[in-house]
Image (spheres, rainbow, N blue to C red):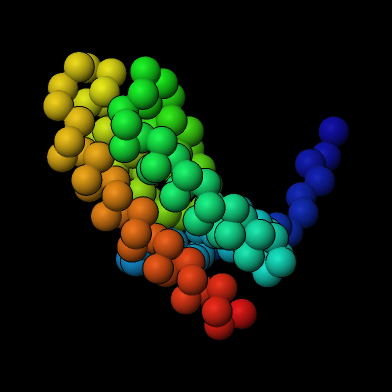
Length: 125
């Protein structure tokens, strides 16, 4: 049986490390298949969600580790890798019974930086 070969167009692979900045725009574009409307929608949703979750985390409720885990996944999906890393650190601290004050503060700073970047992105589109 003869082999049937086709030419496959080359596409760039995702970076091995996240891009610089609070939002990896290349990652976001890959995840939204270049749909600018969808990019704007998910960025706006993430901005709202991250602020809400951070507010809930301030009281360190029993479900705080779950909230941190949810935020980590949402952040990775849009390319907010700094927020994802900070959320992972908080999740680890909460799950391990460690003091959560420093990881929570770091998460707050990462979210603030990401939300500022999101506002800039949404403002120029």
